[in-house]
Image 1 (spheres, helix red, strand yellow):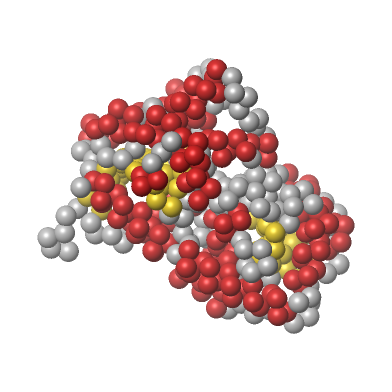
Image 2: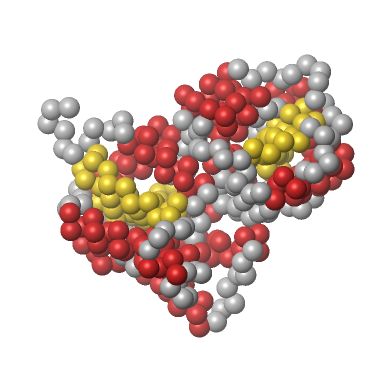
Length: 372
């Protein structure tokens, strides 16, 4: 494209769970932009570097991720001059304030640390106790947020926390959820029809099987669903296989990558998306389900209530309540009109709010603006 200014942007991307999918989706969208030269710095959980075995650091993801990010940015800055930086999540930015002072930077997050504290038990962590160390952690994060030229949150839950908990001005924050490729996932919805007769096919997708409520769903399946349903579980955790031991019609699928054909096929063949998560922020798997025309059964933890509208695009159940899961699945399995209305409403909500082309272009246009 003659005369197009090319912006050189650095993308420092946390590589955990749904953030990997976010990275892949953003990477795909940038490949279609002639005005951006991306430099990718993926920050992985496990790397053969000095921090992997350093006492204190090796067991603390915030320290390990931010130190790795600083090292990668140091190398990048020696080789290239960046027009802007994009940190996702804030964990990768904690030791990079000196870069943020020189280079316009966006900090992107699905949840603030205080948001996370409210669901920490589900992650197997304890919430802050208000002690000296927690206060230092709070001040460190607040200072990082204040150095950013702009902040992008996935949800209003995180936006409100930045304003109320960290004192960030409202005009410095944009809510831009991640998105899904509607050409892929929306195409599955076009093929979706409520099956006549046969068993209802349930789909669960969660890398962290226990935190995502996998055991609760399997309990519900064991107690009252296996005679009328089938269950497909997509996870990275080996414990899922032992959890379904002795069950008829339950299958575990591992080793799947974001947007892969095998995963798409499971969404295509499913009737309902069951996601009784115990702790979450704004899961991308739910966006994929809605785009694929699947009514969603979920809990209202984190920002899930911003994704799933109870009674419209799915049904909300209490966490750790297998009986409520059974009742909700039976309600949708036996009510074709309700299933159809939720399938359509979910697709429409995904098109309006979780369109990858629209959302990622909004994100990149914000970077172009702060670079100027």
